[in-house]
Each structure stands twice: as C-alpha cells, then as structure tokens.
Length: 243
Image 1 (cartoon, one colour):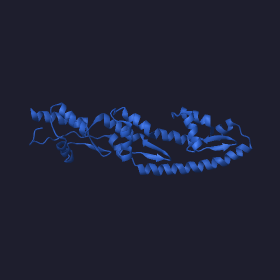
Image 2 (cartoon, helix red, strand yellow):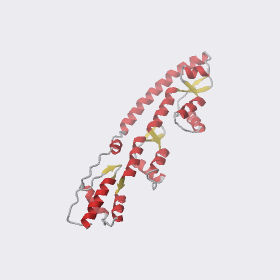
Image 3 (cartoon, one colour):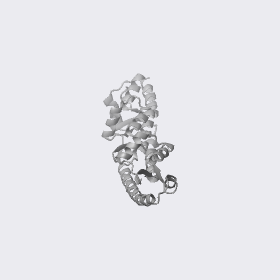
Image 4 (cartoon, one colour):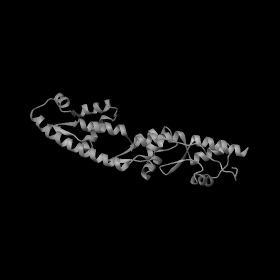
C-alpha cells in the first residue's frame, strides 16, 4: 500500500439496522417480561376460580371456549398454529405437563386461558429460539456453525434473554446481524477484498487505520465491520494512489 499519503474516506453511513441493534436493552426486556408474567399469574389465578364454578355448573366445552376464552389442549394447539406458532402436538403437550404453559382444570380436563396463548404468540413474533435464530442467521452467513453461534450467545456478542427455562434471541438482533453480514465486511473480509485487487496491507496496519478513525466502521458485538460503500471508495482511492 502506498505510504506517505493519507486517504480520506468521504462516505458517511447512517444505518437503521445498526441503530436497532444498539438500542436493544436486555434489562428492559427482562423487566417487561417480569411485568407480563406477574400479569399472567394474576390472570390464571382469577380464571382458576371461575373454572371451579363452571365445573359445578357443568358448562360445555363450547361455552368455555366462546364465553370464557378457555381452550382445550387441542383447541389451544390449533389456535397457536393458526397464529403462525408451529410446534409439534407432542412438544406442546410436554410443555403443559411440565407446567411451562400455565393451565387450569375444569373437572379432569385441562384448559389454557387465551391470555396465555396470546402471550406465546406475542413472544413468537418478537423472539427466535436459539435454533431458529441460528437457521435464520446462517442464510446470510453460511460459514458459521451452530457451536460458534452458541459461543457468540454465551459471550454476549449476540444478545439473548431467558424466559423461564427458554433462552430466546430478539428478532431485531438477528435481522440486524443478517443485514450486517450482507452489507458489511468484517476486518478479515475487508483485508481479503483489498488483496484481491492487488492492494497489500497487513492486518495490524489496517486495524491502526480503524483505531484512528481513518476508515469509517461500526462496532457490533465486539467486532468491527466496514460498509461495502466504504470499501468501494477505499479500494478506488488506494488503486488511484498506486497508479
């Protein structure tokens, strides 16, 4: 790389996806979840009292579902499926058995309040399971394997929260990381891209430029990324200096 002349990158990047990633507040998500769970607990307790009266009145299943918004296990499963929450019936039943999905009993039958089902639907629309998050992210970063993905979650470079026994990843985080994988270069990728055009630079020299702010970049999850437009300008100007 030519020395003695500084290259000034004029490209400025304003990226909503980067802003969304940085604005993820896990503490606030946890506080909101605590409030939601307290509300659900209170709701289920109230429904339990109603359920006992309904049992004594011998209410029909249609009445329970239509008037009191209590769903049998099968109806609850169908309700979730109709709201794009896809899970095997066996797994759904297992969650009910373990108590991770609250229910009330009317006689010998179990019923799930609509408020519980709506919470599951809402959570599904805002979060991925770890496996789902990996599958989605891998569409834009095929080189990453599941073990490496888990490692990033454990280190906190990919934000996640625990709801009960489940670890979930905010959809905003995966959408942002997918966008970054598609539109940005990591440091290693940037150096390789320069080498492809005959521009030779060592990693430590490149990183010094990043440290000094001479190459605009963003820092996400402890890693630095350079936008493709910045890389295009950098490559053009470096090639011009060589000529």
